[in-house]
Amino acid sequence: MSDHFDVLIVGAGLSGIGAAVHLQRDCPDRTFALLEGRRAIGGTWDLFRYPGVRSDSDMFTLGYKFKPWTAAKSIADGPSILSYVRETAAENDVERHIRFDHKVRAASWSSADAAWTVTAVRSDGSTATITCNFLYMCSGYYSYDEGHRPDFAGSETFTGRIVHPQFWPQNLDYAGKRVVVIGSGATAVTLVPEMAKTAAHVTMLQRSPTYVVSFPGTDAIADRLRKWLPAKLAYNLVRLKNVGWGMYFYGQTRKNPDKIKGLLLDGVKAHLGPDYDIATHFTPSYNPWDQRLCLVPDADLFTALKGGNADVVTDHIDRFTPSGILLKSGRELAADVVVTATGLKLIALGGMAITVDGRAVKPGDCIAYKGMMFSGVPNLALSLGYINASWTLRSDLIAGYVGRILNHLKATDTRIATPVPGADVVPERLAFDLSSGYVQRAADAMPKSGNRRPWKVTANYALDTMELRFGKVDDGELRFTKADAAAVIAPENARLAA
Image (cartoon, rainbow, N blue to C red; front, side):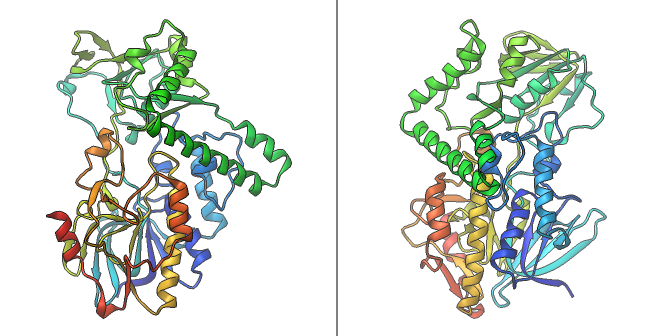
């Protein structure tokens, strides 16, 4: 006989631990468990071990709303964030609810039973079957098993070492060696200055530039406030400040893209000087926030470039050679180590296969309800954070809203909550509204955003706060039913897939 819980949380990373704390506070009478595919708490922050790994969001917004970030650095390194997540779990007695080494592979919903049957696989090949009334996915949005790595011609002839940041080898010694980092995103701009401290030389090889902006690694206003105010109050004020600034800045990129582009490029020029070829290496062809901006704390990337320990090459790869990389321009970059910082592989629901009353569901055929549920899929929520702001801002809101749904189910003596779009709701775009390659490659796997609320996925924390914290739960589009009257998936998703 399988174990049964009121709520099953999948993932024990930043989102999953936060979800468990919210659930204990908002719905203390519900039984729950967390399934974690790895053998440790931390998710992304335990998985990524590459040099210099850090957040590209400030910790006053990446941190939980309920737990102040008290460390000095606001742009924190990976180990510090991991400690914060584990400390949160310990303080709230979450770890005893976690079942490690349980990688969820499938979930099947039965309307007759108003329950999910979840199948997980352990590392020894054995399986576990667990049932729950509500399934809460906090497994992130990318594959832990593989990153994105293009097929590079001739890579098998390279006599050096090729590594992907997601699977950084502990024994990699790059001191005094020539390193080429392929990529221009957040991982690349983190790796280059860190590896340049000990490598002979590091080249960031990019096909096209990314917008890069420098911010101080510490928050001066936060430091002053923490001297005079209680920690929680200071944290909330700085969080409010940073959220407000982030929303304003993003709004300006939509309203005045040319102005913001000029400001960003002027910032790079101020660091690298008038003689640096900004047009070639730091001027993207798209507008700011059409793709994710890269944050450089304390100008460390620019310092490495000015110091001569690193450089940027903008070109296309023709093929690998035994001693390095041959570019389309004819230039060859000599390398002992090549790091393929070429991106993540996005997957929905951790790659889990789902069925509803025997019908297979493809997340890409669904519309996201309030950025957290799938059209036609009962009693399932997804922790889907922001791309243009700290992930935790939305995951905190979603965790609170899951509690509201669960309490509404109990108060109304119903068992099933199913998002059902009206006939006027049509999919418009991906839930992740970015033109980045890693997002577009996953177009078929990710849910769509609708043309109106509550189906329209926004990047606006204020609007999401009003809807998820204060909006009506029984809004007519999230249907609450008893087991025998459950909505089924076929009509909604057949229309979407047509």
